[in-house]
Amino acid sequence: MNTLSNGKVFKHLLCIIKLGIYVERGMPRLKKASSAKEKKMQIIIGKRRHLQLERRKEVSYNIRYIGKVPVRIVMDTEFLKVQPQDSLVDLIDKLRGEETSAVVLDEEGKLLGFVTMKDLLKFFAPFQKHTVIGVGLLKRYSLTRASRVEDIMITKPITIGIEDTLDQAIKIMMETGKHHLPIIDREKKVHGVLEVKDIIRLIRIVSV
Image 1: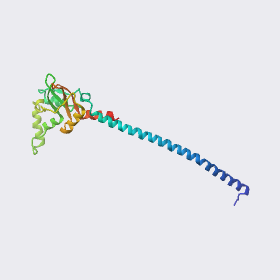
Image 2: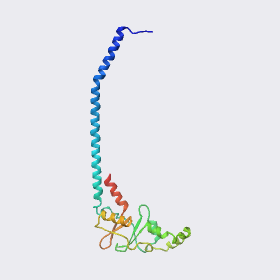
Image 3: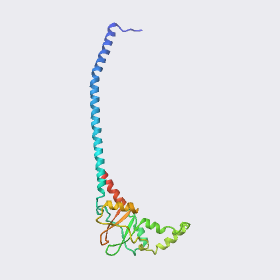
Image 4: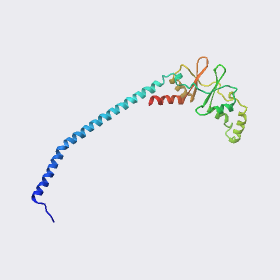
């Protein structure tokens, strides 16, 4: 078994001591660097939290501001227009894509009635609970070939004025459960339709 000489042992111990001293001296530097890094991270985190709080305040303010926005800014002006004498089959054909309602107008563009998908479902629904669904639907469908928009339209729909705000519109929607509101002026001329999705879209925009 080989053994180390006294000189080699001494040199070995000396290297260990030097290494220990070097590590010990370097520790404060490492601690300082680590402390500086932690402080920097705390500053970054603090800034992020501040920005998040500011953003929340801004979003909260914007959402509160939404209520003051006039309905004419948000309303859909490209709404589906029909007349009372139009075929119900034609109306069903036009209710495609994002179209979920139709405004019934006279020749002057004044409101006569309103039709939604829900009104169509009511029209096709069986009369009684115990009616055979298939037969009931076939009977009603046979009638729709000769039926017109005026047969199912709501003649006194809930509306909102062109000068009203979203705050008023939201209140009406909440109280009545209506998702569509024709927007009219004092002469009952229709300028657009406001839907729940239009309000949600605006909330999404100001929240981004």
